[in-house]
Amino acid sequence: MQELGRKGCAPETLRSYRWNLQAFYKTLPEGRLQPGATQRWRDDLLQQGYQPNTVKHRLSSVNGMLSHLGLWQYQVENLPTVDPDLQPSLSRGEYLRLLRAARSLRKPKAYLLCKVIASTGLAVNCMDAVTVEAVKAREIPPVTGKGRPLPLPGTLAEELLQYAGDQGISSGPLFVTRTGRPLSRANITLAVQKLAEEAGLPPEKCNPRCLQRLYHTTLQGIEDNVARLARQAYESLLEQEQLAIGWEGGFLR
Image (cartoon, rainbow, N blue to C red; front, side, top):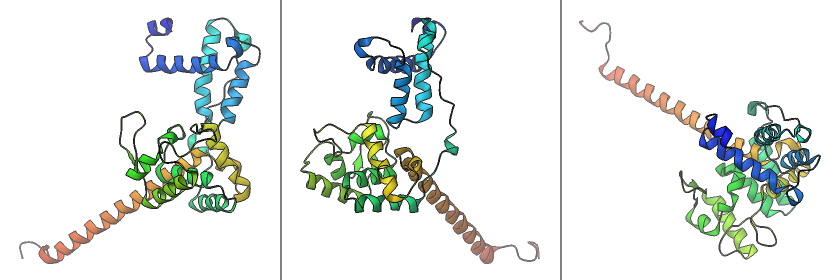
């Protein structure tokens, strides 16, 4: 770390590098590096639903550390960079099929997980911020204490409160395991992907990332339509003014 600091690495880069190494170290049995450990960590991250580019970033930190220590035999081939625009997209119709599948299978938790992500764009690692208190306030507070709270649509808030009542949850996070712990990223990804077969959709489309993209593309489309309507209304106003006080046949006539 000190060497990277001397080379001019930004503090944010060093913190990320340190976090990645600590996360890798925690997966080592008794803290001992064994053959295949790096590859198992990479495969576990992908299985848990982390995006390839995120896994690539974390592996770069570990491979760099192993190279520095001369432990090249423990390195693992990194993943290619994936263009987000080339990833499969989920349409609104396919999203509704997911919801119908969750209802037919009587899986309210999976149903609401899909709805929360697709309706707010909330990141998976922030799902524990969806508490009874937040739902009653109709907004999800920023997890880090910075930024703006995410508004919750009224219909979604009503369903979340009904779910809380059915599950006997009077306070705290809504999405928890049987032992009361907040759902992990892997739990959430698995819950969404289990709906793929019932909905008749490709598994690669049924993940939190695709639901987030659906939220952003839908919102962007609405904003584009509003902007177009605003331009049309403004042009109509100018045309009316032209008829009322416009230059007809030459200003000096």
